[in-house]
Image 1 (tube, rainbow, N blue to C red):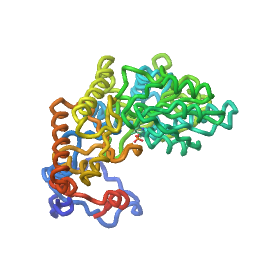
Image 2: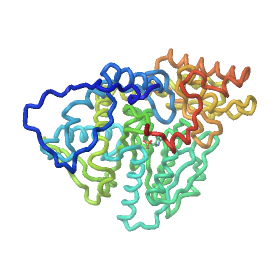
Image 3: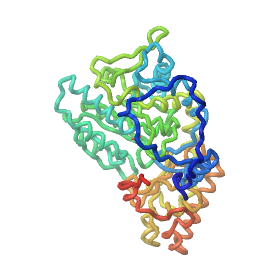
Image 4: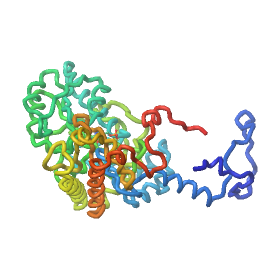
Length: 474
Ligand SMILES: *Cc1c(COP(=O)(O)O)cnc(C)c1O
């Protein structure tokens, strides 16, 4: 495919600026270019075609099924984009005075109020820019809480091995040491191991729920009470709240703080690393440590507010504000009935696919799942040489984006599938059919699968090199 610069034809400029009707402002010579920038000269129609062609080289949720587990690549309603594009939001400067920012402040406040209700928490900050950033912020709340009590020996965070990888990483970043505890055969937290791990040095526990196997832990109330009895606090990784929202609340399960991934559960397109938003909610006893500024409602006006022992800012200004606008639109569009329905759809779709594939593919933990399920291709690889990576690559030939591969780490040859609630039964059936066809191919002619993809523009790039040494210059 040609680059814009290669399509450029000299003189094919688009002079869209009207003639000057005011006197020209002369910049200081020091500030101006000596040579004109080399910009491509191309007509609008060719420009449009260029970007459409470019978009066609990748696979997005608008192209087809995108069952990427742990990421929730769901359909993002267009009305969210319309709201986020309102000039009152996009034209607002973050340093503008409170009096002229009331609408935007109301968005932050109202989203917080709704998330409080959805999670059972008492307060929220919208500052963190991603899930992992939210975890870090939540852990600083826990740290602030213990230190304010003079409790300096609580330096350890307990993290089950079924947690998302960001959990131990965030705990380390926040200055804690991590105690990892092994899961039981059925994927749940081993209560005996947990009891043995707690002590006077326990600052808290981080629970990813549903865990990375896509399972709801059956002993949550017991887990949180073991931690509380030991003097620790409980953190809920709610990145995937789409599995439980409207049905159960972390605040009712004994958790002291939680982060949500607005870009997963509450719909924002987030391919390629952004934009994200990882709001953190907490119980009243942690609220005084929240990042500043927060928005408070005072009569009919909204005011910025700094909690007494605030940790300060964790991000510039107010977080990824337009992601918050999208999330608010999503929540208000779905309403009280739609929120639980969305999680029912997510769980139903995942279980439907899991059920249809059971007996053909091996499940990491058989039985029921929540919003996603994990298969292990260890046996298939032993029998045929076809790996999880090969199956993932072959899916591309059928217009399906690969599921998450080799995650969670506790499952060998893992494929983690999350259909999301917005997919139709027809799409799920087609997905199942393709998975089964690839399984047949793996047994009959493994070369077809190990050599895949055959129909894409590039077949198997060196993914690590592409990420570490991207060529971004022409
Ligand atoms: C995605 C995810 C995270 C990390 O969120 P980012 O926005 O990528 O930082 C943390 N925990 C769980 C369970 C997740 O699925």
